[in-house]
Image 1: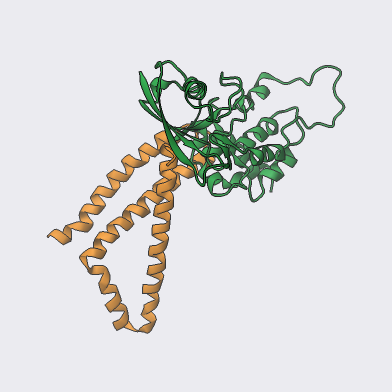
Image 2: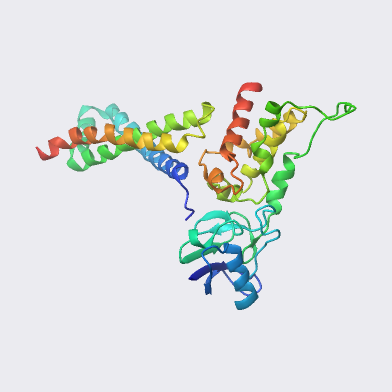
Length: 116
Length: 232
């Protein structure tokens, strides 16, 4: 394992979350497509999303989308802001702070019904 | 102090696959890793093979993967490496023997960007004048010693050895942004190709690995932005 720093970590997370979101998107295309088979089929399949397991998976999905979006903004700044390459590490940690600030409340409200 | 040095070794005449060999050596904290490798080669095991030439961080011969990062063995001190040191050959090149890698592809990529002054205009009677700010524009990329630390730290290069790599881009940058040079267009053609700058994912391993402190990713981004703004 090469001991890369913030840049390598951010890129690996970007890849993993990108693939994760893509897999969800494929699944989502399939479940939306099922509406063509009538409301009963659609409702039966969509009920799966209401299970506690899927709720937890959705929390992971929110995490993946949030990270990918925030890091995407960092990548845009690295690409188009002339000083972007000099502040990429600071931008990564700022991104981590933003991630925690946004993700913790989102996860709290999403998981609350499971315990309440 | 005593250090344990784990070296990834491979002798194509004997070994089916690379193996790790450990040596326990006495070393001063202020010794460079190169001193330790020399001690192993000279006093313990003469079969250990590695490149070194100037031994002072100028020639770029002894770049290797040291404790998981690319460094020059002649620039890193034992005290900064801990008591167990892992030394491996640069990644992404075929291993010739032990720590010696085949750099043919690396220099092919280097030559592809035409790293020399291109200017067919009639030479002026004296020197081609340049202002300090024009010189400053490419100062950082003049420092490259072609050690390949950057290129072999790059995940894009590991997965695709056809990628021209950070070192070639740095050396293209040195001429593209030189006001005396007229060859930017032909170099940018190479760098705008399938295996050119767009393979860079701004991972920054190259910038971290450069023993000369060149802001490698910044140079690559300069070239990308030039391609975006100057040409269609």
